[in-house]
Length: 135
Image (cartoon, rainbow, N blue to C red; front, top):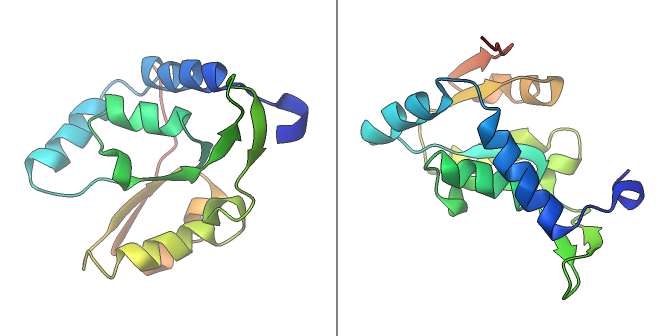
């Protein structure tokens, strides 16, 4: 699919901004509450960098806490390829990332909205299945 779409760097920047503009209304306040309580917040996504990193940054989540699929571009920002070895491009990838994070964080709450998130539900302390809403 990526070879059909071939998103430019500029398009992914715009996508990251759209992610933020269309976020669930209280997403920023929930992230802020966890950060204010001294908790680490991560984004583990099969989405594309830099779009996911832009979204995370706008929510106050540090870049190093974002796991998404890297994309390479030429010097003009045209799509070249994506990281075929990124954990989140395969089944069980989020589970692998959670396993690594559990070595640093003894307790993990995971919020997910898809079947690839459910795959990680048994390796976290709390799993929240998120169905989303818009008002």
